[in-house]
Length: 425
Image (cartoon, helix red, strand yellow):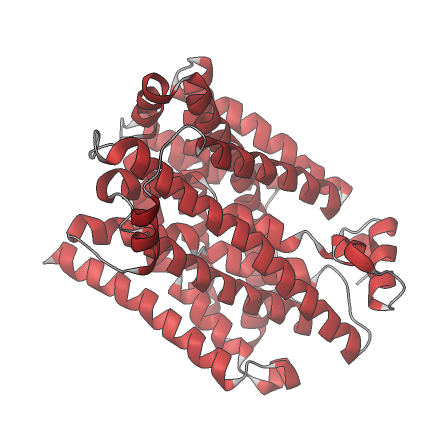
């Protein structure tokens, strides 16, 4: 595949080749490889995370921080495996599965992935729209229109290759990180309770379980597992085993850094909600109510930072979700629909939710539960591919990594099963 088809500029392709050939050293070595994990990390800081983390912190204080930590560790492991599949095979997980699985299985996997992508876009689209409507005092439907225009403008950058879009998304990630860390200057925290909630697992009641599963669904994202393999597989083709090992090292380093930052942001979200709302407003559940409560308690700066992070996360994650949907359809089914049509279809559920008068924040949390129920499909597919010598050769997962991944996947399945059983019961 040519560099042009891969979406790389001549400059980026040259820099990547310089690193692989040992002609580029120092801190500059990692920069050409930065991109795939940064793009994927947006999925771990989207409005769905904000909604579930808000409920977790307001309702249960710092008690569910351990869920955020667990979900982030699971995400790191599985995203690194996804990137590994891309580097070794040069293809996305969806394409590898489509080539190896029977047609009915391929169609079923594609269907689940599309449902997950639509649930993701519902959360992202609504989140950004809520932010715009609150900041500019607009009706929510108008905020959705503004969000649609901005996301479409970012998506058009794909025509100039991966790098401009990666840089734009990276800038939005920076805005999210700075905005949430800055909020800690305004909201007092109980650090002993933070430590206890991070390392001592507790689930108080059924609603806490519902929120915990929502956190897992908002963190371990199905479309991100498919997208990451495609982004790394299409970035640069290693010519030797030495180059492939170098790519894997840099890919793992980027995953740890990018998702480590995303995990820190998520834990900051929960801690901020706990410090701001748990004692005086434990029933705080709506994003708009949280904003209006932050303003008199901690000032307009705290409220403005909250909305800034919400809008940046909604726009960037909506773009990433659309990219993932296009890649999933292309590699599972062998064709794509026009970008404008996909964007229109994925936006429709958001307009339906608003039109029916459904509480937007509750819809965000429910969308994350849908994601958590869908995520075992790509997790199982990823493990099935990563352990096959015929596909991965000498780069297949070792016994320790495979055992750990199976334990994590089983834990996610168990959480989902318990949630469904308790709801039905």
